[in-house]
Image 1: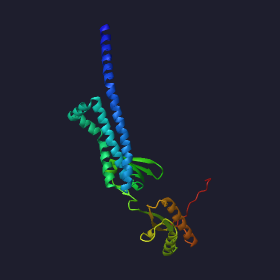
Image 2: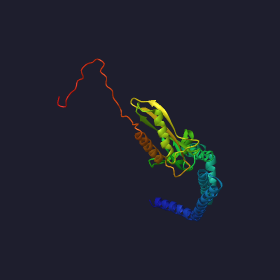
Image 3: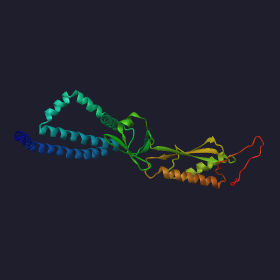
Image 4: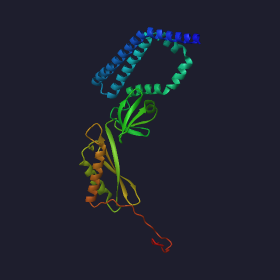
Length: 292
C-alpha cells in the first residue's frame, strides 16, 4: 500500500515539475497568440477602412477584412504551438495521420464548403449589402457576409443566417441588383364598366404618386383575366431601390388607395362575389325554418 501511494506521489510530482517547467513557455505562447489576435482585429479594421475608400463594394471589403483577421489568428495559434514545443508534433500529426485527416475533413466538410463558398461569393458578388434576395424559401434584405454564412433580415424582422454553401448551390433571385424593382396588384371592376376608361384613370393616379418611376419604366395596366364576377386588371409599376427614401410597402399602400379612390369617384365599383343558382327542372325549392 505504501508502495502504491509512493508511486502515485511520484507521478503527481513528475507532472507538477513538467507543468512548472512548461509554464513560462505556455505564458509566452499565450502572449504570442494574444498579440496576433490583437493585430488581427486591427488588421481587419484597417483592411475594411482602406477597401471602403478604394472599391464601391462594402460586402467584399468586409469579407476580406474578416479573412485577414482569420489568417493572423491562425498564425498566432501556430506560434503558440511552436513556443510550447508542439510545432514538430503538430507537423508530424498533420503529415502522418491520413485516416484522422480524412475523418476530420469529413466532419468539417460543411465548414470548409461554406468558407470556400463565401470566398467565391465575395469576389463574384451576386448581391450587395442592402439587396433584396430570395434563396429557397427565405426572402429579405442582405445585411452581411461572413466566412461561414450570409445574413438576411426578412420583412417580418427575422435575422436569418444562411450557410454560404447552400446559397452557392441553389438559385438566387436578386430583386434589386440593377436598382429597379417591379411591384404589382390586381383590381377587379364590374363588367358593365369601361375597361379602357378604368385603365386611363389608374395610370393618371399612379403618375401622381412619388416614388413610382416614369419615363423609361412607366406604369402599365393589363387586362389579366375574366373572373366569375369581375374583369380583373393587373397594375404594374417600378421603384428605384437605390433611393433610400422610397419604401415599397408605403408606395404600394398609397397606390392601392389612389386607384380605389379614382375608380370610386368615376362610378366604377368593385363588384362583390355573386352566386347564381339555377333550377333547370322547375322543381320547387325546399326551405326549412330554424325550428323545423
